[in-house]
Image 1 (spheres, rainbow, N blue to C red):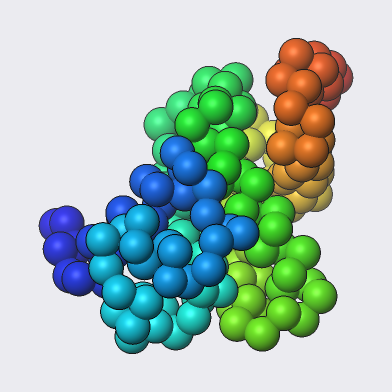
Image 2: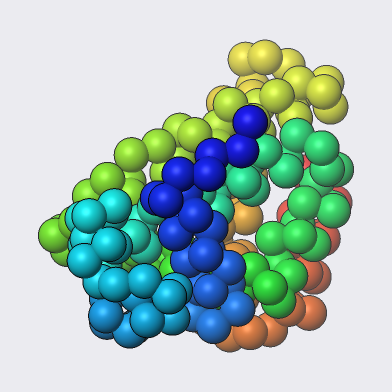
Length: 173
């Protein structure tokens, strides 16, 4: 069942808008204008600009975890590094830094930012025959390498270098 609530519609529109045009540096009023709503509606549904951006990043992460179940690791990596997700990846790291720095309204972002990924990654490792006792460490390592390379990508824009590094990691892994 698709959630057609006003909040869900605004969230979907924000995800689409930020994926194609960015938005983390915009004011709440400018984001509201871009989304065809008022800043008061965004405050009502998300509490603040940071609340909206956190909701966007968490939903994108949830969608990525859902996609992991149906893709092989190489295809998943290609999807993560696609141009249309670059703004969402950049937003993820911006919010991560803000939350770690204590920016008001961003602490919720850290809830599950690691743990929510470990289960799906461990399930993928189980399919690949990794012994159960080894899965937690392998999952954290894979998540760390993936996030590190994504940070490299949003920082440098050098997709070829990032892909080469991931190929080396997966070949050795």
